[in-house]
Length: 110
Figure: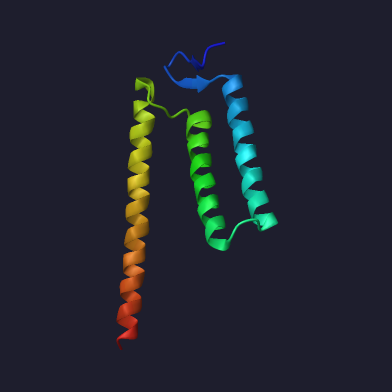
């Protein structure tokens, strides 16, 4: 079975084995995160750092195995849309934080 199946419209879909690998990796990362929190095996700062790292890895797993985003030329449009979305969401979040901080500063100066 091929790594990617392509429909007549050129859309790329993963194989069953690709979905199973992604699912197993996602479950392992989730169980690891849960175990770290439940067992209190790390200090609070190390726990936050480890959970952040596991979250980033899980995002990459989901992007690769379930959303089929990769370095292939057929994935270029998905990658462009993803980068645009990340940029737009970042602008909205940073702008919101700036406005809320500015409003708080202005309210405190009165």
